[in-house]
Amino acid sequence: MSAVPAYKVPAMAPRREDLDPIEIASRDEIAALQLKRLAWTLAHAYENVPHYRTAFETTGVHPSDLHDLPDLSKFPFTTKADLRAGYPFGMFAVPRERIARIHASSGTTGKPTVVGYTKRDLDVWTEVVARSIRAAGGRPGMMLHNAYGYGLFTGGLGLHSGAERLGCTVVPVSGGMTERQVALIQDLRPDIITVTPSYMLAILDEFRRQGADPLASSLAIGIFGAEPWTKAMRAEIEAAFGMHAVDIYGLSEVIGPGVANECVETKDGLHIWEDHFYPEIVDPRTGRVLPDGETGELVLTTLSKEAMPVIRYRTRDLTRLLPGTARTMRRIKKITGRSDDMIILRGVNLFPTQIEEQVLRCELFSGHYQIELTREGRLDAMIVHAEARPNAVNADLLEAERQLLLGHIKSMLGISAHVVVEPAGAIERSLGKARRVVDRRPEDDTAG
Image (cartoon, helix red, strand yellow):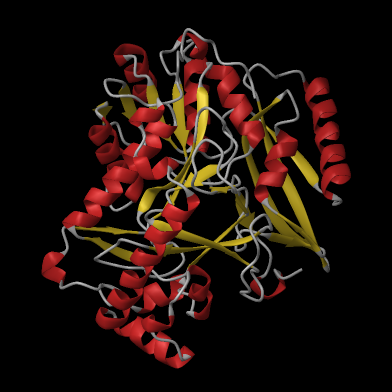
């Protein structure tokens, strides 16, 4: 991790007395609360959501079968397909009139996932986001530049409400208009920025295009989420801005941002706010629950949601559960891949973030890249489009860097790839989640 100038971030770790008592409660206290809330959630879902009543009865379980936390493994999973099948309000557990707000996923691969919140749900969401910002080093009175999109996407409004609850001054910029983003950062001098990590790189590019020194900015904390990102990208952002880059995790199906967050004092994984979300790690193929410490798919159950309780939701995010450090609550390791983002290339399984790590090892390439999958005869092929930094214009040096990246990919990932060096600004920029993979293979050939 790069050094962060002390003048920017004095005493970032929150005082123990400022934490919610449950954050540092004993594991026994946390487990007792979880069991109580889980029993309520199972009964609430069974009694009020036809999908869950049918799923429980088909599986042969009843809410009364929960006697201890491991008993949750007897209950069926919930998938995104289940949520889409209930579109728009079929998964709601309260009358539509009690719904205070509705959010939805983008629906780029099918019908959107509609999520409802009661007033109490919104209060809980605000609470966990405020807790997350505090864990990242945020304090009352700090100014927060919120560049997450506002609207049906949960990022903008979720971070906004939590920041206000903590006592921050919020600048609701939303996404886009990158030149204006940089102007506002320079003029208003916020302490915190919340945004996707890929768009933070676009903001960095704009700083440099304007001839502004990002190190001279006021930004001390960046809270980044909504897409996987690597330690190499963290180092890139921290070194450029002299700031703490901290990971936040959430998903609209469960609540939105604020399910888990890194603590600024350790940056060793994201502490799950276990008083509201119960985590499991399962084998992605068999669904078997794995012991803490083993890598698998993260499964989440809400413990306090009224409008739309979610039982054993398969997130497709790959990680592992570890003991707490800065908090008593358990951590998940930084998520750098999803089971449904996995690329299978000539029998080798890899994730876009593994390519990202190799690209960022090359000094002349920026963090902007895109992977293109094609078909050459009977074999799959991968083209890595790596973007040169603005000051990298020497053709011979760029060719040497291209060869270096080819070697990194071959030696570290065990595959051969083509590398195309793109000029600065050529890779498409995203206001939300970056589009890392373009798959041009015939649909029936993409399995290997």
